[in-house]
Image (cartoon, rainbow, N blue to C red):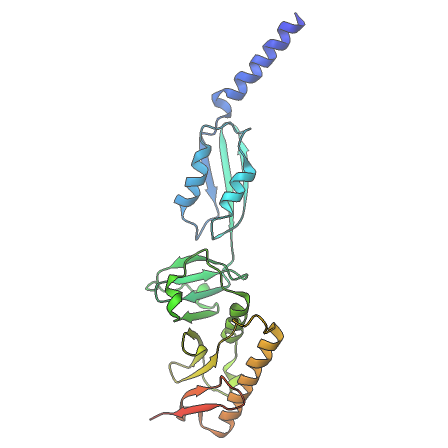
Length: 250
């Protein structure tokens, strides 16, 4: 009798595990802003019909966190057959604009989302550091790509540079990156431009050396404007801070 009872219990458990009560029938998620719902759905829909006890949450997490905008995710399963996912995306640290898109980047340099160039940035995004990348290769950049540490560090330093440090009375500075001059600044609304050169490409240049070079360039420009009227200047070449060139307007 005991054996028959154990067999009955085992059969009951098997029926329970294989029955419809434990099958995943509903999948929900929340927290996404920059991640396309279809990308999340493609990953999660494969779990429909699987027992909630057999869901491989580790594998699911790995696949979800491979999506460019997803920083982390949590998964919970509940009866009858519910699978719920909470998405946490990267915080936007900067906007990297190319000829084809505006790319949103995380603090570690990961580009994780793209928004059309013809759509106005909301107030929060408009306040972030902004880089206009005009290099020929930049048009190929897409979410999932990464800005190198050296390049990003200089870009952020320039984006946060106070015009006063340059001896300028301009109200704004725009950061530009191109193939010919490397990093540059457009000061004011196209009032004058500043060429600073290539940063982030020399593996032997430390962060401290890079910052020191930039500081020398800023000082050189400030010295120039101590003797020249900013309103008369159209273009400044400070790639060599020891010998700054400029072109006057007109």
